[in-house]
Length: 329
Image 1 (cartoon, rainbow, N blue to C red):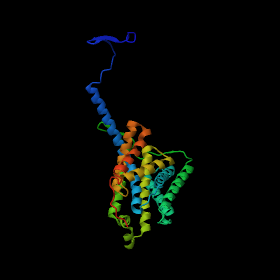
Image 2: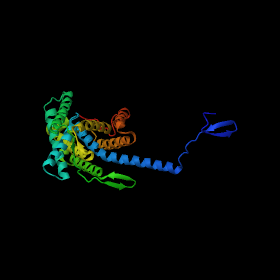
Image 3: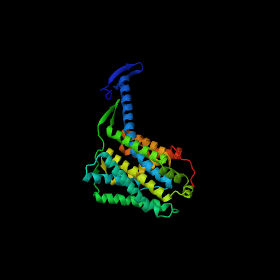
Image 4: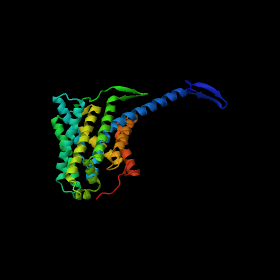
């Protein structure tokens, strides 16, 4: 019994056996407390992710606008978005402008870069070559990235807080006030876009070109002018998203263009190619999902699970959340 000399010997009906100490299971009160803490952590992560997912939704809307009108992808869209945010930083270096002016400057810079991308990558390239514009946008993405990297010496720049950064008590959770402002600005920008698309002549012409381009051209609508306007609108949304991303993250870097491009494409596919409501819902979904994964599984597994979510949609619902009806000339 040398091996059991340190254990307590108990007598049972079948003989003598060593008794090893085992910890007592937690009481029901402790189990309830752990479950409640887990639920609160889940809701906290979900709320923060959904609020930050507003930026993903805006990026997805930009991709959706261009694809819905031209049925082509603009892979340099994220570079234009970050470029607009850098332009607002340049304005801030010479004038301490208020937050709304910085947002407007970022939107204007994104719109200008969007029109530049349209003129250089789409306007003068033959329409029957579907691959050439795609490769041209990749080249424009690299060009804008390299230009920003050379102008900033490749050093990430601190982006100012456009909104007050305080923690608000919302029941058992703590919500960042800057994320609430990001969500509010995203809602305002999306509402203005929907009003523009459905209540103005520009929006009616844009939807006509997206649905029936040949019929729209026969009715006298300038296809090139509508396409340029679409790129300007998408670029303005991208500039707003770039500024909101900068104020939420705290820094701007050319390295942000690749993850923003990937997340924008994921949101566009999950929401449904050409569907603006789908892009909005998918952006909030991806933001909440990745933040929950980051909290419970770590940053290293966040992008992996987002890709698995995309794979699940491609397998079980390839048309996305809101697949637009087919019917284009």
